[in-house]
Image (cartoon, rainbow, N blue to C red):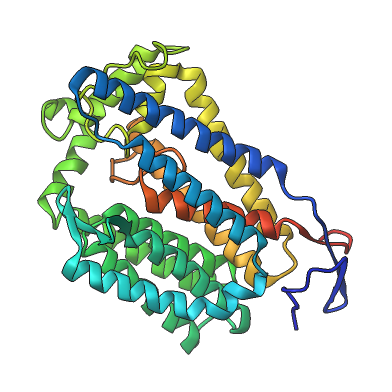
Length: 380
């Protein structure tokens, strides 16, 4: 049986020798840290200039700084916790997530046409982020002890994934629902889901997702605007066009920090969904490519940690965290540069958003903790 919680120099697991080391993955730490710093700088630039020019701001830099500190604390806790802890409490985290989704549906705060936030004591929590985290832990725990295939446990997991995805869709939050579903399905495939089962679920869900786009008028308009934003350049195509103009104006090195124009109520939601366009305008193409490079580096290192982790549960958890952050970054960046439709998904560690920032830093912290465990078996 795997002994994940013992902090010792050597662990014997199924005849394999695993070394616990104080060394962590510094590449992951530095790449995620630089993204966090860039996000704080970008948000400060937005708030300072908006207040100086318009007298108000769409973003509270102080609150985002507090969320960043809370996220760092959450990351440190995840880094230092015994690996067995999350496995023991994984089912309870899922129960809590379901409760939060239900409470949000009935008593959540409405904003931007959706009820996605739950206000507790003056703090807004985006419950879809909590649900995705809890679902990753649940699936990882289930298939650490159960065989994945044409059996009851696998169908039970698929039902729970579908129920969670539907609850997020009802908020409605199509982007978060898509990330939650894809992340969960890919974890199961990595855990050993038969290819015919994976393809049948993936193809049927992709077809259903395509159909769902045209069941809501606002999603249909956004999708058609993605295909040709200039056809409705002052309506649903407006964000696509202004984001591209921001990159064009920024050029190679940008117009300078604080000198961007899009944040002056020209490009809506520039502090959340479209913060990369703000960075592209003020800091230029070079910094934009550097941001993409940092995300690639961060996610690759997390995949590497999962690959070499000797514990199945932690391996699946870190894999799920890496998939979640990778898919979220791809969807956001793809939408900003008009390679994908905009879905309202924030960019991890950069965008304004307390829950996303804290959850992302928790994921990074846990991966850093797992990176200390390495197998000494050759080729592992």
